[in-house]
Image (cartoon, rainbow, N blue to C red; front, side, top):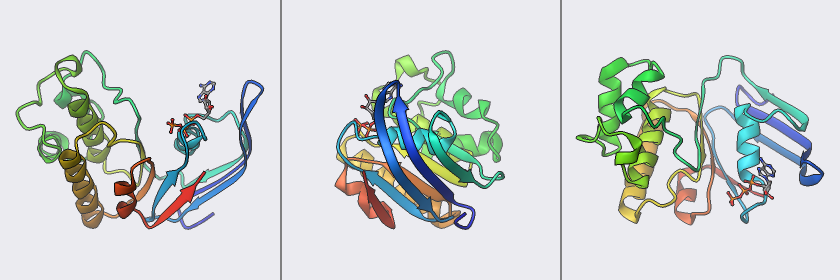
Length: 193
Ligand SMILES: Nc1ncnc2c1ncn2[C@@H]1O[C@H](COP(=O)(O)OP(=O)(O)OP(=O)(O)O)[C@@H](O)[C@H]1O
């Protein structure tokens, strides 16, 4: 086990009889930032879901410190349709309560949009709300699956800056799948699939 981070060995991962991953190992130290890159369909999201504990149907081993708080931002924002942005964040019972929720929504540029439902938000706004929901929980491990895709350059850069400042304020482990070369400046190490 590598210092409270992630220690993953996938001997084999199949969907039905399709072999997706074979003999893949990933070790991320606590506090490290790692990007997974590689062509579409190579298995990046699959690895992230396995690390997050959402997919246990594989041959191999996953070790994660029991006490680690993991949050994940999916490729699709996955907000609850019947909750406003503010309610979605509050529902997770974040450590800083309503004050932290308001501050985080402001930090992702959603001040004034706190009481909108997902259907009333653009995809980019939903993505930022999903990022805010993950960050406000003060995770030990944050998993991002192409979280900045479909954001315009300026907004994506603002989200990267937010991530950087959050990690400076309170160091946490970051594991992200990305196709964007701009994201690589955020990480210590790149793992190509
Ligand atoms: N639930 C599923 N059922 C069957 N096959 C799946 C499932 N999820 C993923 N796959 C298959 O697993 C492979 C890897 O998919 P995955 O989403 O992990 O790739 P990826 O590298 O993240 O791709 P992208 O960059 O396009 O997001 C693909 O061939 C995909 O068709």
